[in-house]
Amino acid sequence: MSEHIFKLPDLGEGTVESEIGEWHVKVGDVVAEEDIVGTMMTDKAAVEISSPVSGKVMKLAGEPGDMIAVGAPLIVFEISSETSSRKAAEPAAEPKTSEAVAASAPRKAAAKSGASGTRVKTSPAIRQKAKEAGVDLTQISGSGPNGRITRDDFDNYLSDQSGAFARPAQTVKQRATREVKIIGLRRIIAERMSAAKREIPHFSYVEEIDITELEALRKHLNLNRERHERLTLLPFLSLALIRALDDFPQCNATHDKERNVIVQHGPVNLGVATQTADGLKVPVIHNADQLSVDQLSSEIRRVSEAARDNSIRRDELSGSTITITSLGKLGGIVTTPVINMPEVAIIGVNRAIEKPVVINGRIEVRLTMNLSSSFDHRFVDGFDAAQMIQSIRGMLEQPATIFMPQ
Image (tube, rainbow, N blue to C red; front, top):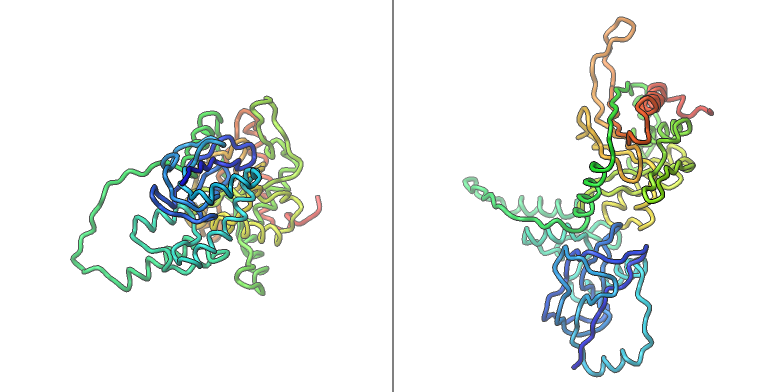
């Protein structure tokens, strides 16, 4: 028997360290080569790590939440002398990039699942929820890519189980206190939100918009569409924002703090804030200014779903120049969205409601919606921000102007 030290590989994009997301093995476990042994978290994604050898786990580098430097020992294996000799005879392999690891992980995970029936594809957050609820993930059918278990799959399974095994009417729920370690995406969110509020002097501007005509247009365009192709309000708002940015390039910008410059971008790389089981992610539609309303609708739907089921590409989680955020029906009346650094503006969408409005001396019921937007006051003057929102308002209240040549 001999010892094999598996060092953390380079996960790409200049990563010098990575956070342990979760372990799928423990000391004493015997694993086969290419088994998934754990998940490492980068700023962009969770990357599954596979074992380079077959052997027994003798030592793990740390606990979930601990930071490990690239090239530092991650796992120590005990391997047979025959395996050791074979590995010594093989040429040294280059560390896998995150793209290579991410691409190979689904195949490895699927192979293990088929062989033992105990390994399934899902996110670290759902694994944790399953562990807390005592749920065997192999009993859940995944509807995501390659059978991946999504948040809806997990919630539906819990709902079915609670219906099948209802508690007695007199059972009182015990309220337990627990500590939750801040790791993975939640840690990254906390750090970025803290930095954004600490460094950026936010100011918010809220405007009410009458979207009665826009909603009528939307419903008309959806008449002959399949359900999955129907337009929401978001692509119309996105298109109006993109057109407004032609006159307000200072809002389609990012702050390069190291060089002390503001980069006013030509293309609009639209961030779409998306709530997922792992926390808030901002997938990006690159060159959104080149897309039609139908194409924007399709891309918003695609990147949002990909962010939720973790099939999003790494390059689609970076490079945004301005962000739209919406809580849908939970949007409330007013919000104060936090700017997605290093951007300088974020557009927040509140829920649409019917209300009485005075028009030409008469009271009419109109569909209204508030836009709650935040700007970096160091680089965007209040007057310019207000003018941009008023420009968007004008297009949304007269939706034909969204599609007219400028």
